Amino acid sequence: MTKFDLDQIAAHILGAHDGRSRTLVAIAGAPAAGKSTLSKALNDHLNATDGVSSAVVPMDGFHLDNSRLQALQLLARKGAPETFDYDGFE
Image 1 (tube, rainbow, N blue to C red):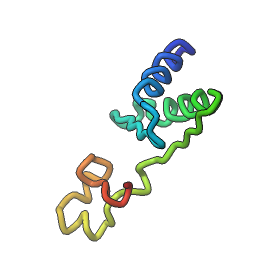
Image 2: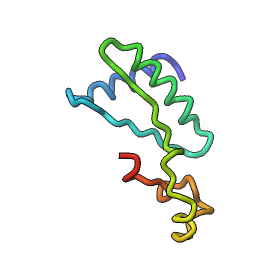
Image 3: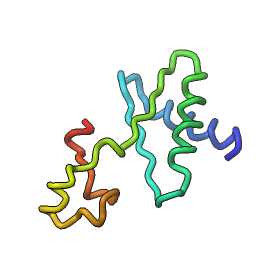
């Protein structure tokens, strides 16, 4: 990823911010696609911007409990979108 890419992504995020107190940015992709690498680089880039505070909140801590996944017959798909506890993330 080049610096230009981060500048462009950050500009888009900051442009969409529109003065709200918080903006949530979701990064999705296949396993090993570079989501964590992009998240860290973008977080560092945004935090280097005056007046901007950014944090990375990984979704790994927001999986439904294994017992709930078993009941839903989704344990084998843990990590798929339907296995996350979106209410717990909010």
